[in-house]
Length: 69
Image 1 (cartoon, rainbow, N blue to C red):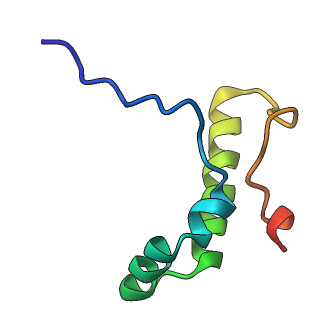
Image 2: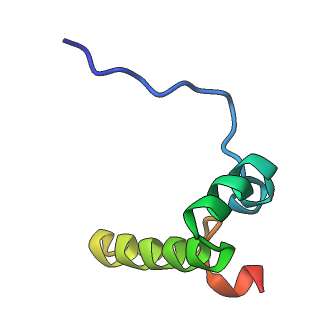
C-alpha cells in the first residue's frame, strides 16, 4: 500500500506566521504553551538535526532563537 503524501500547497509558512495565527495562539493558550516554548523547541530540534546530519545549514532559513528576539 502506498504511503499517503503530504499535500503540497506550494509554500511552507514561516514559523512566526504560524505563531501569529489567532487559532494557533488560542490552542497554545489552552495548552499552556508559550511562544518561547515553541521557539526553544525549534532551535533545539535544529541543533540536533545538524549534529545528526553532520552538516552546517547556516545557508538555509533557521530557527535560531536570536532571530525572534
